Image (cartoon, helix red, strand yellow):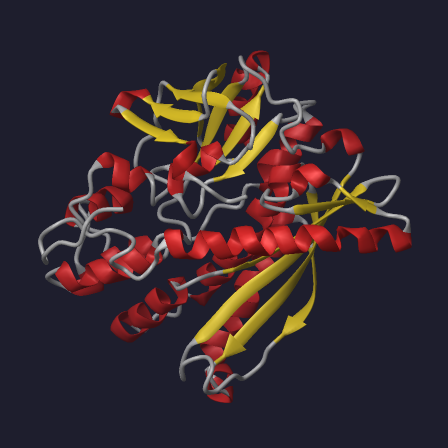
Length: 373
């Protein structure tokens, strides 16, 4: 992380209140405690897929197929929506709903699962939040639309009013998702990942729902706050609220096309370091990077971040990574593009120490830069 600096110096993620050096050890401790509970599955005749421990979704072998599950929260993006509503009068909660579902579904599909059911958790700081009919209806409509895009059933949810826990006038949004890996050959936990495999990157729509703490902190430096225009004239706050892309239509289309990814990574928190998520010792060589979306260019410039800091925090134009057989790389790009998602063949997996080499930017991330297990 960058050192602390003055108002015009580098603004790091740690300065915005997020320090993964403090958060990640808890994740590791929780994973180790959780692993000991897998023995309880045997009472039902099931077993866990051990390789899914530490991945983006947890997988259980239930016999004829695998069952995958995930829970994810939106984070602080709703605070941007609230402030932009105050400034513009427009509700943004239809897009915020898609962001929330994307956080869960884009994790679930990394293990080869087809999303099946989504559950909602909408915890408000008081009952009054639900009294804004326009905002509440936008949340409902956006949630259903995202479910329809991904072909999932919205099973239900919980809407607690948590005054004293959640700040008044705010809402904490989360989603859980259950999916099927069927047939079992679709399982993608990296067992087959090998040197020579190609790395295909799917484009992002903007900041997605990660790095918002820094993006909100940056407003203090901007002359017009959230209304400060980007180079294309789009207000900063509006650009931040572009909804996260849903990638399950791509993974489902790949299956229908006969393409089975060897491994997948959802590029969220930790930025491009997420390409190092697989525990095996491989070198990931990136020879081509996608265009950086305008809002991320804007953030990097005004936060005075060098490329290494930016790529360790944000998606920088790549929201999802697919590791596929080299002969399937170009076809993978075509399938993604047919679903309306830009994609590029960015690099390859090589034998060597565990590291990510982003050659066009002269950036190296090593095993020490991502500790999630």
